[in-house]
Length: 266
Ligand code: DHB
Ligand code: FE
Image (cartoon, rainbow, N blue to C red; front, side, top):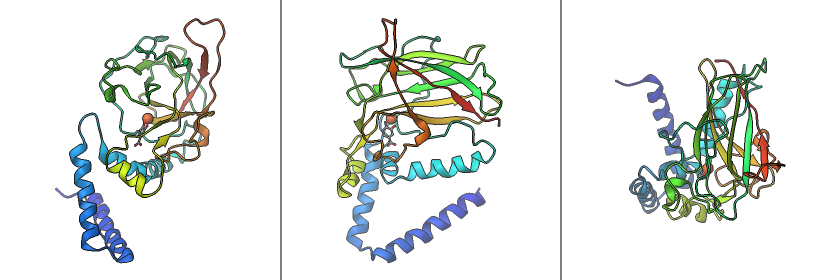
């Protein structure tokens, strides 16, 4: 069955593709190259690598779509934590961990460990929200997410936490570091073509969910990181910058980060 909305979207896409081809006077050879790039992205993709998404991301499409979606959702929720793109490395199937647990099971020697903690609150009333789920994931200091790296155990640097009666969550993680997105495929080829680097600023991914509230997919960025001004996938927003500060009296962590998440009612 055709959906009227999908028909509208595809009709517009077709019109814009035609306009684009006319504007640049696209030749058969050039179009063939484009088709090969799309096919290459498809061939490279599997459950550990989402090259189609990566290609969209380096031209800023996921970030633009996130902005449009968020704007639509946000008229009544200006106070909520801002969203950012999901990116290609999310996994659905990772475990719920206890408050205060670590998500780092192969801590590299060059890593700085962070105690990250805070509250999930109602954006308007600031009432603490119990039973919210915080889903986190980050790359290791070698720039690889666990599913890209045979040297990390399954679900390393991932975890789901549920806020307690005071709306609080806490866990140990690594201070994130900047790293290049995979550039041995079509997304990398596009970046080269445009004389752009593949680096992303240091970030931690978060998805925060609670029934009755608008879900938030976002990333927080280390204020001190390189590449905040030229993220290869255009995801940085000022309100998502955070500062890791020294932590005293904790053998497990040199740094800490207090971060509260503001949810808007549905
Ligand atoms: C992309 C996003 C990420 O968070 C990441 O770590 C790598 C790539 C992306 O948007 O393509
Ligand atoms: Fe990422």
